[in-house]
Amino acid sequence: MGFSIYLPIAATSINVFLLLGLGGLVGFLSGLFGVGGGFLLTPLLIMFGIPPTVAAASDSNQIVAASASGTYAHYRLGNVDFKMGILLLIGGLIGGTLGVQLVKILRATGNADFVIKITYVAMLGIIGGYMFVESLQSLKRAPLEEEIQTASPEKPSFYARLITGLPFKLHFEKSGIHISFLIPLILGILVGVLAAIMGVGGGFIMVPIMVYLLRMPMHVVVGTSLFQIYFTCVNVTIMQASINHSVDFILALILLVGSSSGAQLGSRVSKRLKGDQIKILLAVIILAVMIQMLFGLVRTPHLLLSYKGGH
Amino acid sequence: MKLFPLRIVHRLFAAVSLFTCLSTTALYGEQSSPGLQMIVQPNSIRIGSFFSGEKITVRAAIPHGYQAALRILGPREDLSLMRKGRVGGLWMNIQEVHFKNLPKVFLLWTSDKLSLMEKADPEGPNRLGYSSVLSGALESERRGEESLLVKELIKLKESDRLYHIFEGTIRIKPLAPEVWDQAEAVLDLPAKLYPGSYRLELWAGKEGKARLIQSGDLEVKLVGFAALISNLAKGKGLWYGILAVLVATFSGLLIGIVFSSKSGH
Image 1 (cartoon, rainbow over the protein chains, first blue to last red):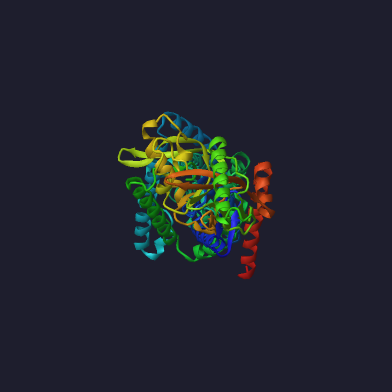
Image 2 (cartoon, helix red, strand yellow):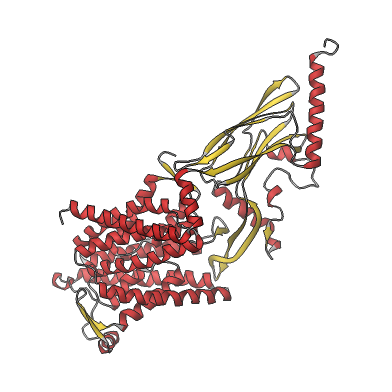
């Protein structure tokens, strides 16, 4: 194998250009959509022979770089709502802690894997399907309406009345919204719980929540999501390194060179695309992952045994 | 010295050596017999940053007319795996399965079909193949499924190239006519190699009965930057994690700054 490098924690050798390419692809998606990309990269690394626990931990480490790079790029473009990001992050940390306890209870009852897989497929299907239909409808509307990033109906919905009626309102300048700080906090908790159950960073759940439930403009959503993902992955990397010793720094280093560059390109392409175009592309990727996962659940597996860990 | 023709001396020597070798191996299992040299080149493996597998050449003398096998067993481990099953028509992990004292690596090269080398002795366990190390390794209540689970374990390990049987890959050529043969093989070790002490064994077989002739250790160790990273990750996990985060953050920001300066922002 030419240009191979040995990964001491994964205990295997892999082609450097393959890793740069994988990192670049996932970083591009990260910069474009504001997702961490763990739900794509971890299965790909496992497919190329990296042990699942090392793949998941090292992936978190490289997302630190991609999200730092992407956040910086979006910050320069004025697309990061720090106030919103911090509230979502606090909610995410609380939700993550609650979610881990929930997984413990599910494991004790022996239903953990079933609940995790079904939740994963259902979340991907609902979010991807809704985003796809809504973005398609928005794209068909008149050009003037395109800049309105919400799927607002003619009369205010129950949810709209609820969020305007809650106390402790704050003004979020970058997002251009005036809502109670309880809303992002509660939604952050919800995403944290789901992310802990599914074992992912939660970017692909957080982005639609910011768009549809917080009604933030798509470009600010991407930058703010990356800002929040950065802190989540810093926490996961340090925990994995100190408890499981499963972070392969060399693997992460090569991936991050690719992903940080990819994130830069992604954030530029993101600026050139319309909000609905970004949403529809993300919806297609989410639905593709959901179909692949569903297929994996129905098809008889090639191997009846697998290593523990991974997503 | 003309009292006995050289050929008879050779045969006597071979008979005595073979008797000594087989009897000591049978009695003590692993003891190597004096006079039988196994040449291994290189005799240790160093894993550096650019390691992508290693080829080692083994040459050994075996009694004339015998088949040969070389076996490499990796360091032992206890392994927990997830067993897939169907729930509500969907495939998912349903149970943890534990194996104890498994070799991380099991590689076997033979000069002939393995079944021919092990066909006799039907009452005893197979001494060379997978079952010699996997028999009794399953630690589970699902004993009824042992055969299936062991077969699945082999499939999993083979897909990782950690377990493999290479039949017919040892060349045998005459060394001393009708007395000794030379077994020679190039062992292609995979890139997925764990550091530790590996066991290299030479087996010889005839009429379906294989015996261990000689064994030795093959050290596989990390060197250079790979060793530094591994030691840091295992010895100082927290600091390693913080360092990994700092490097990732600065690399990400640096790439961001480089890109923004190039685009004239």
